[in-house]
Length: 228
Image: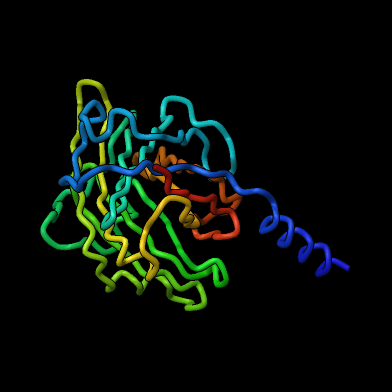
């Protein structure tokens, strides 16, 4: 009986209408930029992340995420208010940083496989411009080994210490996400996250709360839809 009840919960999670964010087409590609008032980002559609992984509001950390796309790339901009930064003392912005998730990061989990939802990609960027990308396979008990994959994505980041906001931009090649050519109406499975602050005051911020001690709950993903 308990197993049947759990199965019903799982079915409901997958069947419920997921939250949807949109990504607007851009006329041309640009280098990843962090100015929200730029021509590229000013009118981009956005969503807000304002709750932790359990769905509890996180005052002072409401995070705006914008998205745009071109024929080649998918873009994200994170606007991240903070109280206190938790930065890696020796940042390396030339090569990727494994286990970057132990520090302050903005994250995109995104997948094109609607049949096997345990397969997706993970992209992270820190306030200092460190980065890591992972090919996630939750069928593998050590899915963190996916960090050796290389998507070719590009990032930019900066910290406005006076305003206590940090910004992160990502440019992800569609070739790293799906074999299908991008176009209006194309959808991906997606969730967005932030890890913020020192261990004594760690705040985990999610677009779609996972209701678990991990971000890796694909049943809780929302949707990203490409639009004109």
